[in-house]
Amino acid sequence: MIESLAPLATYCALMSATPGPNNVMLAASGANFGYRRTLPYLLGINAGVFALTIVVCLGLGAVFARYPQVHGALKIAGALYLVWLSWKLAFARLGDKAAVGTPLSFVDGATFQLVNPKSWMKAVTLASVFMPVGMHPAFGAMVVAIVSLAIGFPLVSIWALFGVAIRRFLDTPLRLRLFNAVMGLGLLALAVTLLL
Image (cartoon, rainbow, N blue to C red; front, side, top):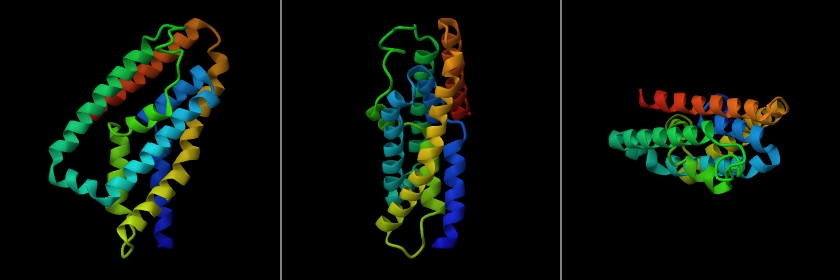
């Protein structure tokens, strides 16, 4: 078990630290609202990924293996949601409470994982590659999910902190609008790559 923790931790670090929908949204939220107001969304993302990992490790991953069209439908739903988020972010009017004025919530972060293909890919890989052999499935799923959370939380926090760090350069409405447009285009690019 101990020897398998290093590859598991490495995989979790790579999946958590690299760009993806969660991290792009965290950077944008950190830049627009600061870390404290982004924290509920960040906690929601981590709670959603944790729950998704448990559920997939306990057997939902087998559904994808048997019915690949379910996975395909999930990818399309996730891509469409990313297109909507990119539009909302890129064309947000400054001061628009429904767009830029209100940070995403804990529930937004948690429920987004249901359609976030990167989170599903991570969970399915954790279930199929890193589940401990010879361990009760519920306990093994908990171990994998806890390691994923322990590694992932600080790494995705860095994305929100990156947004906070560049916030001082976004001190004019034009700069903030341009930043939001670039982040929106980043989400749109991620949506397109999901469909390829």
